[in-house]
Length: 551
Image 1 (cartoon, rainbow, N blue to C red):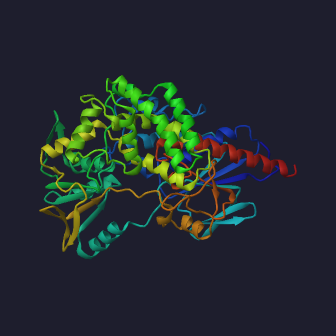
Image 2 (cartoon, helix red, strand yellow; image 1 turned 30 degrees about the vertical axis):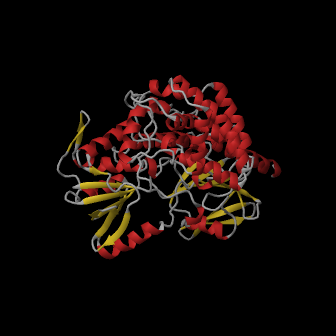
Image 3 (cartoon, rainbow, N blue to C red; image 1 turned 30 degrees about the horizontal axis):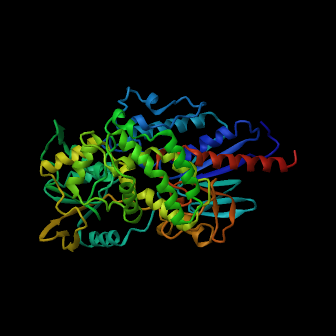
């Protein structure tokens, strides 16, 4: 290794799964680099590579929303860890949904293995980077008032940075501070579990009916000594007196097919997938109306073919009508209530009911996630088209990001047991009371003393309160691709400033660039082509830097 030049220095701000994916990709691209490369990763969270979402210390009641059969984040050839299923101490059921904490421990092990290889050298800096400033061709980073660097390259992988609460939550936070009413967060679940020990005689409401609500329900039931037996819930007596669920539409997401055997027939024919890839690539560069037309033309035959495999006959017009509603008002195709939606999801996922257009297309869309990213992410999509396509993808998460069917069955059992109440599920009126909240739906009113917030912030750059990101925005270096979405970046993650100019040696990967990229919430995306494109760009720039310097 050369010693006549100082080491090339790289900073990665954020040390979660996306950071690990980027580091692994870069290590592979720097395998032939003879010059020393030093990488500093900045993050206050203690676990390397896991991040809060996959905290190794999180409650064992928190499950992934991906079945073991679909987890494909194989380690690099140089790693000793192997695939997640091989790394686990037990032989996993491929139809099971693993613990988040187990995945976090696996990611931590992969990081440890990568760091032990020694090239590049990886050093962890525990703390939250709070500012960034140019220094020559590189950057300096502020940590607790001290400037570190300079760094030849900086990569931002912020995950979900701190953000301004929405108006409703902000109002509630002020109310709880004044009144003593209890307002709790869904995560960390272990903190929620400790607080819930005191809620045995209280009525609890949960804001949000997305994936997080199933973790919260387990904490408030199984976590307090209850158990499920033969489809029934056996109470411990320590649970809240009642748990009210509510959201804007009051509908839970649909679970994924229960087994690999049930899931396989939702895989579209190869020719349909190839046609979709071409359509998505064209749509990503088109005006919104043209993009919609292109995607519909590719989606309709795929849905028809999958439904035909299930002996379900629908016309192309029926599918087109469903898609038109999905583009305009996601979820408006069904008038089912909350309980009916829950029960329908269980029947569809278990194969007891033939799939309808929505469920079939939702599963197809889930299976196309890699193709969607491969076609969309490498191009610069017009902002209004980005808004439309990303919105379409986000709406379909009620199918493509669905929970385990076991979680849906648990919710149904809790309703049967009188623990969970859906009477206020669909957008109730919410009023403050001296000691809590009152939910009103029609003629029914219910007072609650505890509110649990299970709504996760959206990847909206404009609501971020992280000092480093806010500083970059104020200086015009970070800018939204369109209002209410993430930052504008190039395909390799290079940040594009307010004037449309790429900022050298500064990159951003992940959900905070939503709009420039799509489907970034997936764990698989952390280890996909986005990380590879960034790594190739960095390796090439570092090579150019070395070549320019005198020997």
